[in-house]
Image (cartoon, rainbow, N blue to C red; front, side, top):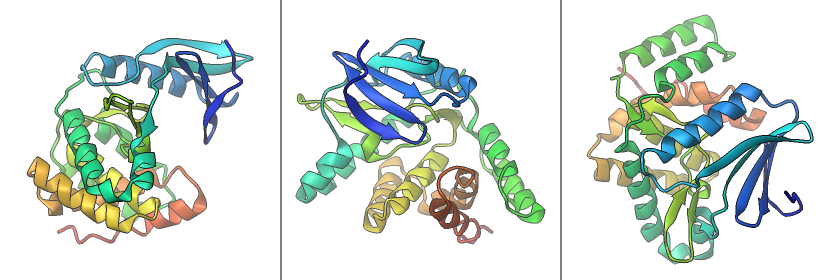
Length: 249
């Protein structure tokens, strides 16, 4: 297996291409449990029938864990939006349709979104009163069991030359409330500096899914708090600024 063609570098992982295989190699100190959970998520999502790269094997390379999947040749939706800004409306429609398709699936063995969020909120640096409030808000939100991607953004969508979309990166997949997943995507647009895109996305998602915008907004402080435990300091401060932004009551 050749690791001489780097196609992406992320925090604590590097992605290589070897022929028709894509090899995601994790740093030596990366949690084995997290690698195996990501591989298991991907294998379970394959069974839902969604268009995703199929997993081939999990292995170690020079003492580092690696996940080997199909290599999907194409461009990311993020690249296409950048290269053809005049088609952004078309691309955004496709993006939202794909997310709604994800939410149409169920996968009973995935981790529960509420459990993951409760665990992450407990790890934040927020004071005890704020954490208690967030846990209480989270418990009060309706329980659903829809597949949630957890990191749904245009750079995780590959469009092949034939026009077939594939959804990548299932590390954060859970089952839960689709509006929480939408709130996460909205914040990802903000983090990328695309405020206009965030607004366009939320309007479109709510229209196509027939979900009230206020309902998605109710998730934003909870999602922002749970996401603040990772990422750099600038991102962390931005996310924490959202914790009390939305009037909840």
